[in-house]
Image 1 (cartoon, rainbow, N blue to C red):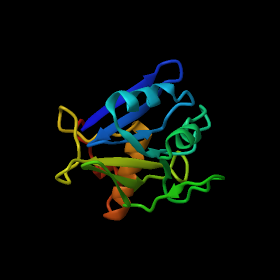
Image 2: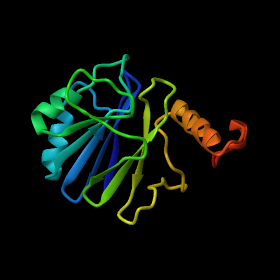
Image 3: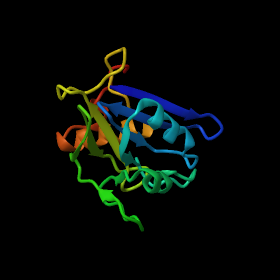
Image 4: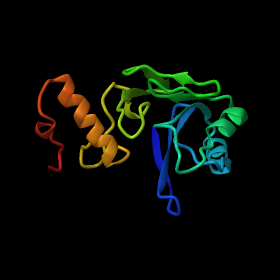
Length: 165
């Protein structure tokens, strides 16, 4: 399994390249697709999915170009209404990439289709960083996730704490 953040400082935007056992996924790709295509060819993997955390108004995504060049499926979270062919995932829906799984967690807030993606290893366990934390794309995604948990378990949102709190 390989996970790499591809960060573009001028836009303060991070895309993610994830591969496992011959297949790959890219999360929130930028318009310029050459770096992704080059990485796929270098690693000898096939792009299976392009995940979008939400519709982006702050930059132009490369999802359509990547789909056209690779045949990969574009995946949005629940309630998305795209004007092109895509998968509108259900909350909790899972997608296999090689030996790993990406689970869609609907976290509306920033936009109504906003989603967080939970990466699970070949044993079904959440992939964590070196400090044993599950990573969220930004503070807004974390806060949205906290609100969802609080609502699900009928507790005040302030009672949902993260590792660093």
